[in-house]
Length: 591
Image 1: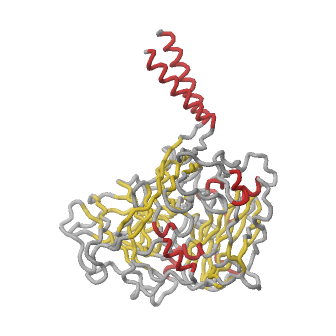
Image 2 (image 1 turned 60 degrees about the horizontal axis):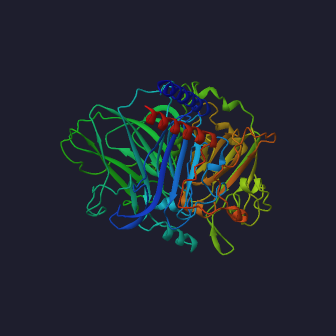
Image 3 (image 1 turned 120 degrees about the horizontal axis):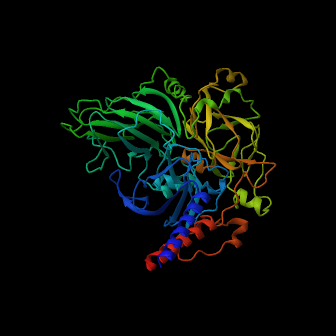
C-alpha cells in the first residue's frame, strides 16, 4: 500500500510538472454577475447596475502575463458585453467585448472571457459597452501588478487607494438612450460620484441632506498610490486633494516622468496613478474634489464630486470652501499645456526588464496617415447621428472576424476614407484597412463644440502632439519624438487636434471610438482591420470554443442550459486538472 501511495504521489508530481509546462503563466478566475439594484447616490432612488452586488464593481487584480478567466453573468433585462479598455488582448480580438468583435451575451446567459495580461502593468477599468449601460454603472477597477523581478520606479507605497470618478444622471441609461433616440442631447448631469457615492455636504444649497459620501482613511506620514479613473458619461473632471500634492507616476499602464500637480484634468475614460504623501497637520479632514471642466462652471456648480480624506489623527471635519479649480479665464491653453507636460519615463522598465524608452518611435517611418474629423451631431435619414469623416458607424449584424471565418458576405466594407470627404454624411459599416506591422499616424481633428476623448482597443499609442486649429503637414514640426506618453485614451480639445502614432503589431479587428458615451452611441466609431497576409495560425488566435453566434450565423447557436459555465480553458488543461483531482482523491482514500 505504501508503494502504491508513493507511485500515486509520483504521478501527481508529474501531473503538476505537466501543468506548469502547459500553463507557465498562472490562471486567475473571476465571476462577475451584473444585475440591477436600487441606489440613491444623489438622494434620488434609481436603478443602477451592480457587479456582484457592488456599485462600483469589485477589483480585478492580476500580475503581468497572468491568464484571466472571467465568467460574466448577464442578469439584466437586455443584452450585455463587457469590454476591457487598455488591456491589449494580444492576437485575441475575440475577447474585446464590443459589437464589432463579439455577439452580445443574451439575458440570463453567462459567457466566459479568457485573455492574457500580456506584457502589461498599471491601472485600468472594465465596463459594459452596449447601449449606454455604463451610464448606470457596471464598471469596476483593474490593477495589473509588476512581476517581482521588475522594480517599480518609486519606493513601494504604504497602500493603494482606488477612486472612480464620473458625472452622473439620476435618469438611468434607458432614459438617457431614449433622449438621444429622440434627437435630444443629454443635458447637464445631476452630479459627480466618487466610488458610487454623492458629494460630502460642503454647501447647504447645492448638496441636500442625507447624501452618503466616500471617506478615505489614511495614516499620517505615509505615502499612498491613488489610482483615479474617469468612468463618467461625457464630462471632463478636474481632480484635486486639498493641501496635498499629486505626484503623477503612471497613465494607463505606462510610467510617467514624475511631476507634482496641485490638480489634474482627467477626461472621460482616462486613468492615472498618483503618489500622495500624508504630510499635513491633520487639524481637520481634507476635501477630495472632482469638478466639471470646459463648461460654464458657475452654472455647473452642482456637478462636483466631494469625498473626504480622513487622517486617523484628524481633529475635526473638513470645513470651508472647496479648493479652487484651475482658473484659465485668460489662458485657454493651460489645460492643453498640462496635457503636454505628461511624458513617458523612458528610463523605467514597464512589464519587461527593458526601459520604456528603448522603443525609439520617433525614428520609425509612418506608413499611413488618417485624419479623423468629428463635428457636432447631424441628422441622417431623420435620426440624430455622430460621425467620423462623415460616416456614422452601423454595427454589423455578424461580428467582423466571425463573418470572415464563416464567409458571411456584405457584412461590412474596408473603405474608410483617410480624410474628410466633401459629400453628405451617411450611415455605413466602414472599416480602416490597416497594414499589419505598419506604423500609422491618426490625426483626431475635433471640430465639435465639446471636449472629447478617443480610445483605441488592442493598442496603446504615442500621443505625439496636440494644438488648437486645423492640423496641417507643418504641424509635425511640433511633435514630441522622444518621450511622448504611451496610452490608450487621449483627450481632443474642441477646435483642436491630437496626433497619435501606433505600431500595428497586434492582428485582429480593433475598435476606435469616442469615449464620450453620447457620441459613441450616436455612431462615432470605426474599426481597424489588421490581417497578417502571411497568416499561418501563429499570429492571431482562432475563435474560442465558446464563441457566441448572432446575425447571419444565429442558426449555429446552441441553447445554454442552466446558465452553466461556458469557460474556454484549454481542453487539455481541464483534463489535467481533472486527473490531478482524481489522483488526490485516490491518495486520500488509500492513506
